[in-house]
Amino acid sequence: MENQVLTPHVYWAQRHRELYLRVELSDVQNPAISITENVLHFKAQGHGAKGDNVYEFHLEFLDLVKPEEEERLNKLRLESEGSPETLTNLRKGYLFMYNLVQFLGFSWIFVNLTVRFCILGKESFYDTFHTVADMMYFCQMLAVVETINAAIGVTTSPVLPSLIQLLGRNFILFIIFGTMEEMQNKAVVFFVFYLWSAVEIFRYSFYMLTCIDMDWKVLTWLRYTLWIPLYPLGCLAEAVSVIQSIPIFNETGRFSFTLPYPVKIKVRFSFFLQIYLIMIFLGLYINFRHLYKQRRRRYGQKKKKIH
Image (tube, rainbow, N blue to C red; front, side, top):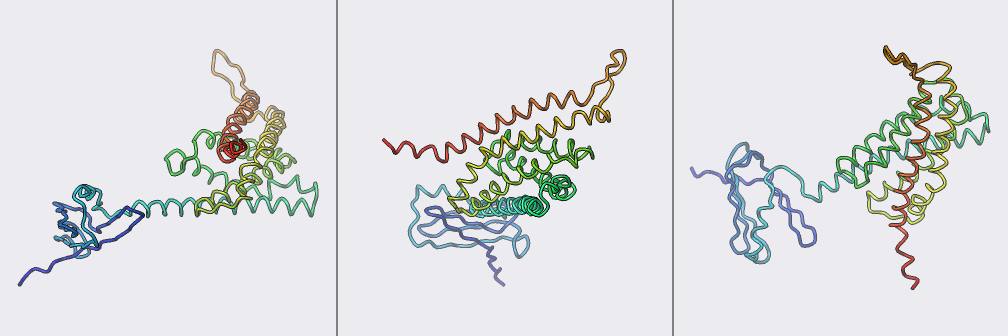
């Protein structure tokens, strides 16, 4: 009895003048690929729908294939991978969902603080931490993913500005506010959280629309403009929180330590906080310059049309 010819699953994708074929085979051995006039011939040993067997197929194109383009057959992938377009769509989908979650988190914080201020006035300042801290913890821990995305090339954002913002905010949140109950009832917490969330709701919503190739001019302008007043105000609020925490750390002695013999000098944690105050404004300069360059690339070219 003549052996049955087994045909693998073949996926076709076309983009402009590029053609992608994906053959659903794994553990491929001895692939034989050739073109005769307008017919692609494929035969290989591999693991497919019918197990480990020899699979083959013949694909007829509409026109003749030019001989000089035959080398492009080497780009056929014999693994079960997606086409470049599929991988791009997966990346965009992942980034869209990440930005959506962050947008919803910071929006919840912003709306919550706004509504409470409208109802309670200044009284809402003093229990801000106990009201929204859990959501802020979640958003700031998730912000680690944004820096990782930049580091491994998932996004094109530079790593340094993202890392500076991540470390700076998490230091304020987890060390200054999180470990000191005396700081959690201060009004400065409201301003820090409110300014952080005000910046992020526009930034993450802009990134969301970018993932689906949408450009809303109003949102784009807000994303590249609001940081000018809000970012320095946020850093100023962070600096105020550090200054207010210094006497508390001195009084409690938390995170202070004594150097070993023979020095035996007590090093107060407030000493590092004073150094950190300088680093806040250094980080402000680095990130401000980065954001300014982004805005200039986006809007700076229009001025050339005046002449």
